[in-house]
Amino acid sequence: MNIIIALIVLSLIVIFHEFGHFIIAKSNGICVKEFTLGLGPTLISFGKGETKYCLKLLPFGGSCVMLGEDTEENINEERAFVNKPVWARISTIAAGPIFNFILAFVLALFVIGYVGYDPCKVAGVTQGTPAYDSGLSEGDIITKVNGKKITFYRDYALYLQLNMGKTLELTYTTADGETKTTIIEPEYVEKKVYQMGISMGENIEVLSVAKDSAAESAGIMTGDIIKAIDGKELTSYEDVSPIVQACNGNALELTIERDGNTQTVTLTPKMVDQSGYVYGILLSGAREKVSPIKVIGYGFSEVRYWIEVTIKSLSMLVTGKVSANQVSGPVGIVNMIGNTVEQSRSEGILMVLVNLAELSILLSANLGVMNLLPIPALDGGRLVFLLIELVRGKPINREKEGLVHFIGMVILMIIMVLVLFNDVRNLL
Image 1 (cartoon, helix red, strand yellow):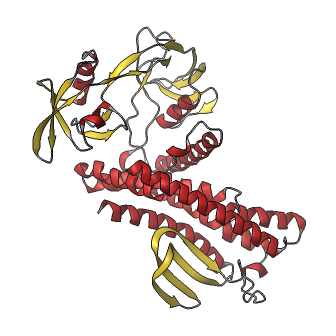
Image 2 (cartoon, rainbow, N blue to C red):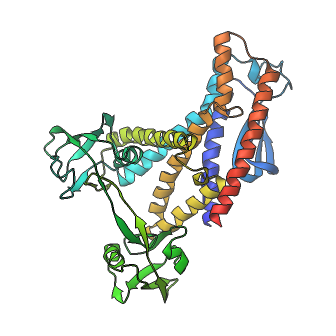
Image 3 (tube, rainbow, N blue to C red):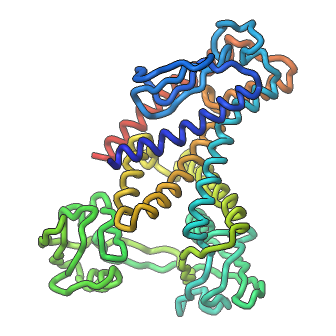
């Protein structure tokens, strides 16, 4: 069922992208020959008017095939893609990514309208850290970091992740509405801790198990509930860390509940180096409800945030700061959606929908950005040729353009196979 839900989510995102091409092509008087969801052999197809609608075997991708777009067939017809004004063709090609951003915005309205947004609110300042004498106090809201506007808690977290160790000039608003500025110099602290290699929810349920961790070696699985450690009953996830840190590398006996049955496993925590820069600012990240007008504004900011995350992630991939093994393709995305459904199920159907919508915002914004990259065969690559035509006043030779797009498609398919292999390897 999780796989089916994941495929439905992916399909809806792809359909919306292709619908953007479809509806703008129609409005520009371009003949759409085929509207397809999926790749590979055709499962179902039917014709309506001049368009053939198809559902194909592999639910990854789709297409909106326009008359005269990539072939010489009926190229002289008035409704062929190549015979339309250049601005009509630009708008038709750009419509797919733009519709992805529109979908992300609509989903953002739903998520923020229901659960609110996450202001960058200070929950406290740790004593003895660089931030302790900075003037920051509980309830202050950080609005800028080194001149960069901060809307969400995630904006601050992303900036800090990419600029760890930098001096921070913070602009913040106090509970009285006063705007202040402070400067915080980070301090490098050497720290080693014991870790089991799991993340937990409020009810001490295991949400994830890290690869090659002590928990994985012990056979702990996602969904397990930790009831006790060395005979000490647990009431919340906050009880776990003090026990683990006090183990001194010795084995711990965990009592877990799995599928209604209780069992015991032995686990030896691993020492992990967590040395790094310390600022001492504690942020809550809790969401707050806002008025309908503000929901719209934060909806735009939400889409902006995920576009920024996608662009920065691509930059880190190109510069080698992110490994290619961390890239997820269709299989990895399906697995991620399935995990989201599984972890949200206990909170009710509405929270499942909210979490799926939030994940879909990321995926839709990601698809929009990726398709705007100036890579042959993608929308961005086609837009490059159209913009060159706009500047030159005449199109580039169609055979040469077609060859460039064909080579681009071959390269993209090779990359897709490599990503698919990486997905399966990580899943196994």
